[in-house]
Length: 269
Image 1: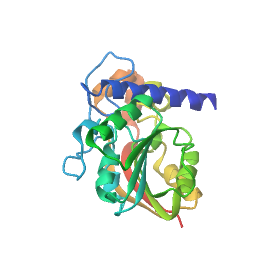
Image 2: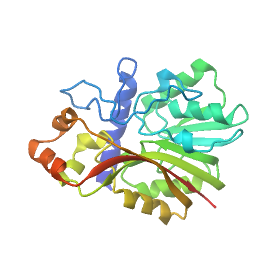
Image 3: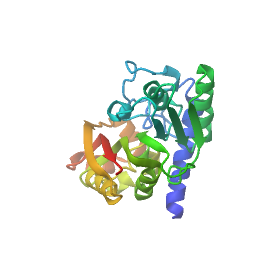
C-alpha cells in the first residue's frame, strides 16, 4: 500500500512540475524527466487536436495518448467527467459538444494543474466547466453523476486500476458510458524497465498488459467493451538511455514486446 502511495506522489510531483513549466515547455509525459540531465522534449504519444472544435492551444500540454472525445459519443446536454483533466484540454473539447445545456467536470490530483485549468476556463468565461482537485480512485462526486466519462493517458499512471474502474462505474449514470485512451503493454518486459521510477512518472512503466487491462474492465460488469483504436508507441533511444542502463535497453529491444495506446469504450447498464 505504501509503495502505491509513493508512486502516486511521484506522479503528482511530475504533473505539478509540468503545469509550472508549461508556459515555456510543452511535451509528452515521457519528455522532461523530473531529474534532468536532458531538457529535450519528446512528443511520443501526443495527438493533433488542432482540428477539433473547442480546442484551446494553451490548455494542450501534449501529454495525451489518444483523442477520447472523438469516440465518446458525447451529446448536447450531457454531463461529462474527465479523469486526470490536466490544464483542461479534453474538457474544453467536451464542452463544445455538450453545449450550454451540458456540464463538464474535470478531476485532477495535481494542485498546479487544477489552478492552470481554472485559469484557462476563467479567461474564456466558461461557466459550465468545473475543475475539482481530487483522487480519481475516490472521486469527489456522488453516484450516478455522469452520462459520459473520458480520460486521456492517465489511468495507466496509477497502480490500482481495479479501484479506478469501480469508481468509473459508480460515477456513471445507468445507461452511461466511458471512453478512455490509455497505454498498455504486450509481452513480458524486463523487470528493470517496469520498475524504473522515472519511467513510471513518464507514462510507460506503470502500464499493464492489454489483456489484463481489459479484464479489469470486464470485472466491473461493463458491457459492450470495445477497443476503438490502437496505436503503436515508439520510445526514442535518447529517452531510453536517459532512464535505463545498456543491459536493460538491450533486453527490451531483443524481447517480443510492444507498447500501445488504445482507446476503449464500455457501457454501464
